Image (cartoon, rainbow, N blue to C red; front, side):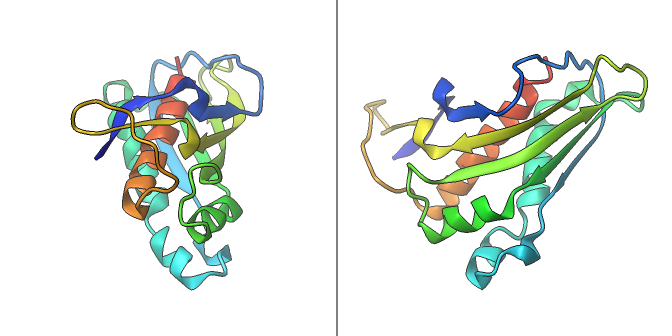
Length: 161
């Protein structure tokens, strides 16, 4: 069983205007999450590398846009959504990754955007090795983690264009 790389359009929920930033160059990407705010010790341990993993996923998609002079992307992940997803064993309907995304550019004020991005497992298409759709209620934690990271990075990069 594998999750398809193609993510359904319903995957992203943006709580802001739909205007895109039009960013050609990026000088910095930072992702933060206050993992210490998660009271469930097991959940905090599970999510311990999420900031670095998400930062790397975004950078991997924009490697050809990285320049010294460019926009800065900052993401602040919501700890409550992280804890809830873990505690619900990545139930497809309730597993979300939520964060505030800010794009700023000191050299071009048009490259400004600020929005909340929410990514859910419920919009992911799951298929088996033959490409046949699979129906299931939950996903193993590691697969859910990677899928949420990839989908969130895709959402951020999509909004740059």
